[in-house]
Length: 147
Image (cartoon, rainbow, N blue to C red; front, side, top):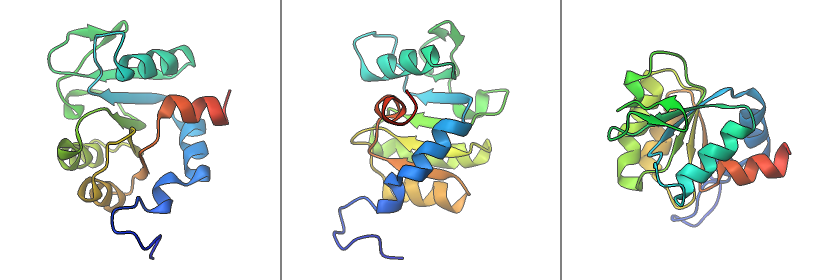
Protein backbone atom coordinates (compact mmCIF):
# COMPACT_ATOMS: atom_id res chain seq x y z
CA UNK A 1 0.00 0.00 0.00
CA UNK A 2 1.53 3.27 -1.10
CA UNK A 3 0.09 6.05 1.04
CA UNK A 4 1.90 8.81 -0.84
CA UNK A 5 4.79 9.44 -3.19
CA UNK A 6 7.08 11.66 -1.08
CA UNK A 7 9.68 9.44 0.63
CA UNK A 8 9.90 11.87 3.55
CA UNK A 9 6.16 12.27 3.99
CA UNK A 10 4.31 10.53 6.79
CA UNK A 11 2.06 7.77 5.48
CA UNK A 12 -1.59 8.83 5.66
CA UNK A 13 -2.49 5.74 7.70
CA UNK A 14 -0.44 7.18 10.59
CA UNK A 15 -2.70 10.25 10.74
CA UNK A 16 -6.02 8.54 10.08
CA UNK A 17 -8.90 10.38 11.77
CA UNK A 18 -10.84 7.22 12.64
CA UNK A 19 -7.77 5.61 14.19
CA UNK A 20 -7.20 8.74 16.27
CA UNK A 21 -10.84 8.79 17.43
CA UNK A 22 -10.74 5.08 18.29
CA UNK A 23 -7.57 5.47 20.36
CA UNK A 24 -9.01 8.44 22.25
CA UNK A 25 -12.30 6.62 22.85
CA UNK A 26 -10.80 3.29 23.99
CA UNK A 27 -7.73 4.37 25.95
CA UNK A 28 -7.73 4.58 29.72
CA UNK A 29 -4.01 4.39 30.57
CA UNK A 30 -1.38 6.46 28.77
CA UNK A 31 2.35 6.01 29.40
CA UNK A 32 4.11 9.30 28.66
CA UNK A 33 7.70 8.51 27.68
CA UNK A 34 9.88 11.52 28.37
CA UNK A 35 7.44 13.26 30.72
CA UNK A 36 9.25 16.30 32.10
CA UNK A 37 8.83 17.69 35.62
CA UNK A 38 9.08 21.19 34.09
CA UNK A 39 5.55 22.64 33.78
CA UNK A 40 6.74 24.73 30.81
CA UNK A 41 7.62 21.66 28.72
CA UNK A 42 5.05 20.33 26.22
CA UNK A 43 5.14 16.83 27.71
CA UNK A 44 4.08 18.18 31.09
CA UNK A 45 1.24 20.28 29.69
CA UNK A 46 -0.08 17.45 27.53
CA UNK A 47 0.06 14.94 30.39
CA UNK A 48 -1.62 17.34 32.82
CA UNK A 49 -4.39 18.00 30.28
CA UNK A 50 -4.95 14.30 29.62
CA UNK A 51 -5.00 13.58 33.34
CA UNK A 52 -7.66 16.28 33.79
CA UNK A 53 -9.71 14.56 31.06
CA UNK A 54 -9.80 11.35 33.11
CA UNK A 55 -6.96 9.35 31.58
CA UNK A 56 -4.51 7.61 33.91
CA UNK A 57 -1.09 9.05 33.13
CA UNK A 58 1.98 6.89 33.71
CA UNK A 59 5.22 8.88 33.67
CA UNK A 60 8.23 7.17 32.08
CA UNK A 61 11.30 9.12 33.17
CA UNK A 62 14.23 7.39 34.91
CA UNK A 63 15.28 10.59 36.67
CA UNK A 64 12.00 11.13 38.54
CA UNK A 65 10.26 9.28 41.38
CA UNK A 66 6.83 10.81 40.87
CA UNK A 67 5.27 13.22 38.40
CA UNK A 68 1.76 14.65 38.43
CA UNK A 69 1.04 12.57 41.53
CA UNK A 70 1.87 9.28 39.77
CA UNK A 71 4.80 6.91 40.23
CA UNK A 72 7.37 7.42 37.50
CA UNK A 73 8.98 4.37 35.91
CA UNK A 74 12.43 4.14 34.34
CA UNK A 75 11.20 2.14 31.34
CA UNK A 76 7.94 0.88 29.86
CA UNK A 77 8.89 -2.65 30.93
CA UNK A 78 8.96 -1.52 34.57
CA UNK A 79 5.25 -0.61 34.54
CA UNK A 80 3.46 -3.41 36.46
CA UNK A 81 0.03 -3.00 34.81
CA UNK A 82 -1.38 -2.76 31.27
CA UNK A 83 -0.86 0.37 29.18
CA UNK A 84 -3.17 1.35 26.35
CA UNK A 85 -1.15 4.11 24.66
CA UNK A 86 2.56 4.88 24.65
CA UNK A 87 2.86 8.63 24.02
CA UNK A 88 6.42 9.54 23.02
CA UNK A 89 8.15 12.84 23.78
CA UNK A 90 11.69 11.60 23.05
CA UNK A 91 13.88 12.30 20.05
CA UNK A 92 13.18 10.21 16.97
CA UNK A 93 16.42 8.25 17.33
CA UNK A 94 15.02 6.63 20.51
CA UNK A 95 11.74 5.53 18.94
CA UNK A 96 12.77 2.11 17.56
CA UNK A 97 13.69 0.85 21.06
CA UNK A 98 10.57 2.44 22.57
CA UNK A 99 8.42 0.80 19.88
CA UNK A 100 9.98 -2.59 20.62
CA UNK A 101 9.24 -2.12 24.31
CA UNK A 102 5.68 -0.98 23.57
CA UNK A 103 5.09 -4.19 21.61
CA UNK A 104 6.70 -6.26 24.38
CA UNK A 105 4.40 -4.85 27.09
CA UNK A 106 1.31 -5.34 24.95
CA UNK A 107 0.39 -1.68 24.48
CA UNK A 108 -2.42 -1.05 22.02
CA UNK A 109 -1.07 2.12 20.39
CA UNK A 110 2.14 4.04 19.79
CA UNK A 111 1.61 7.80 19.56
CA UNK A 112 4.51 9.95 18.35
CA UNK A 113 4.16 13.63 19.19
CA UNK A 114 4.92 16.51 16.82
CA UNK A 115 8.26 16.12 15.02
CA UNK A 116 8.86 12.65 16.49
CA UNK A 117 9.14 10.59 13.31
CA UNK A 118 10.76 7.19 12.96
CA UNK A 119 9.91 4.92 10.03
CA UNK A 120 11.74 2.02 11.74
CA UNK A 121 9.87 2.54 15.02
CA UNK A 122 6.56 2.97 13.23
CA UNK A 123 7.11 -0.27 11.31
CA UNK A 124 8.07 -2.15 14.48
CA UNK A 125 4.93 -1.01 16.26
CA UNK A 126 2.73 -1.78 13.26
CA UNK A 127 4.22 -5.27 12.85
CA UNK A 128 3.58 -5.79 16.57
CA UNK A 129 -0.12 -5.06 16.11
CA UNK A 130 -0.18 -1.56 17.58
CA UNK A 131 -2.13 1.32 16.12
CA UNK A 132 0.31 4.06 15.18
CA UNK A 133 -0.15 7.83 15.12
CA UNK A 134 2.73 10.05 13.98
CA UNK A 135 3.41 13.79 14.18
CA UNK A 136 0.19 14.59 16.04
CA UNK A 137 -0.39 15.95 19.54
CA UNK A 138 -2.63 13.86 21.81
CA UNK A 139 -3.88 16.99 23.59
CA UNK A 140 -4.83 18.78 20.38
CA UNK A 141 -6.46 15.69 18.90
CA UNK A 142 -8.42 15.09 22.11
CA UNK A 143 -9.69 18.68 22.12
CA UNK A 144 -10.59 18.37 18.43
CA UNK A 145 -12.39 15.02 18.63
CA UNK A 146 -13.69 14.57 22.16
CA UNK A 147 -14.16 17.89 23.91
